[in-house]
Image: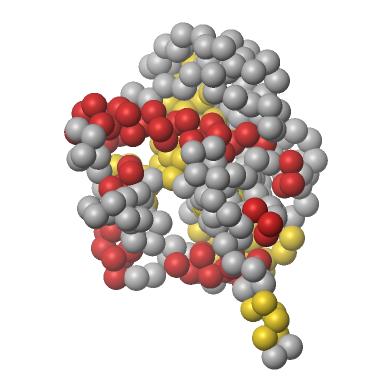
Amino acid sequence: MTRRAEETQRNARHNVQVIVFGLESRRPPSLFEAIRVCEVFRRRLLGVAARFFGSDRIPPKFSGKAAGGGPLSDDHQHLHVFALALKGHGAPSAERFVDRVGVVCRAGLSPPEVELVCAVTLPALAGAPIFLTRTSPEFLERPATRFWSHTPFLPVRHPKLRRGVVRDAFAEQVALELGRRGFPAPVAISNHPGPWSQFRTARREKPGSFTHLGAHGFEVVFDEPVRGPILLGRNCHFGMGLFLPARLSAQAPVTARHRRATKPRTWAADIRPRQWSEG
């Protein structure tokens, strides 16, 4: 872990790092569309932050941009958005539907920043309003030694053969990113089956590249319990590369509802991959 990351974690010790909302809707989005759900949530969060701070004073931990406008170099301590489908977690092939959304910010969120996150609403999907209800993140932060991919890990480099040795293998990239985020070295990383190729992996607002590297799932094992959630790889700030404890319980009680549904908008009737649209 770098000195900057250590300092950030010290500053975040007394601030909130994980916020989770239950998502209720008659037609919730497919987990295969997690990246789109996360894009919409983040865009709306930036809109809320712009109204509060001013469009030119959005905190870097929200925008992911440094003062000069370039990418923020903070070892990924700034805000990640994620989507969960806890019902059926661990099932390798069944399509599941998003029932939780949330944010992780290892830099920590102050009480006013938490209020901004809690002010975010999501638009209706397929004409069905969405209700967001803040719930306890304890089930996500409970330490564990085994983690499974919940959304696909997207590599950022192509494996290369050098003097008979494979460099930048996908599992090696997982281990490297874990180290950069301050996690202990895993004792094992193995492939984890799943419908990873069915996930949408390119952002709508920034398609990017590297899609030829595919989407992959892994099981990561540590020799001592670590606290999740873990997000790694390309588009990890938009819900990709999410690892959850292998024995995660789906019993995450929803607390007081503090949000009203947004007004319905016209969305595509089918929200499966490549047919999901925002309006």
